[in-house]
Length: 193
Image (cartoon, rainbow, N blue to C red):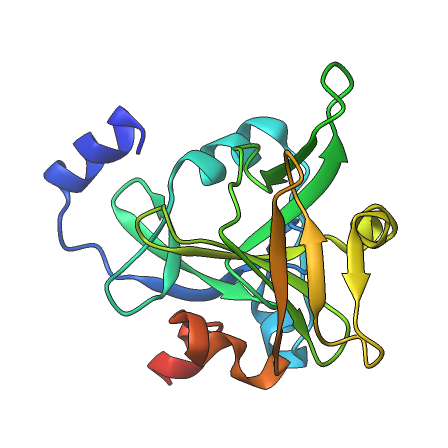
């Protein structure tokens, strides 16, 4: 958390929380949702200002209830999640040739488990982080993923060859159960209502 945010929290500890205004889409883009977008159930407008995106990324956390938020100075802005709290990109390192996973904030992501949902989405879980992070693979990286995965006939199981020949079993999961299974809240606004 940025030092300026810590100072604002100390100075104004009782600022009301905000819900519904910030969304993380399925491709890891932060989106601002005004009242009209919220009323229509729209995703909102992409945030494109690099400094603002960096500020949100550095101050993105979760509470004990599994609600993810951006600490905007003294105000906690809860994030609506289109799917998971994290979106990851899969790439091949140009120097080593090893696969890498990077989350939407630009940080490395170390998977300990992999899942395929019943809609064809790929999820990775980093159990070593606190809190545990669950991330959906960006859909643009499914081709690269498929080059390193072996799927069962039904496409809902198999294995993903990660690094140094280490394979992660691909476990099936129903998309409708992801939020509960991995302990996060996709819509803090709906929960608050």
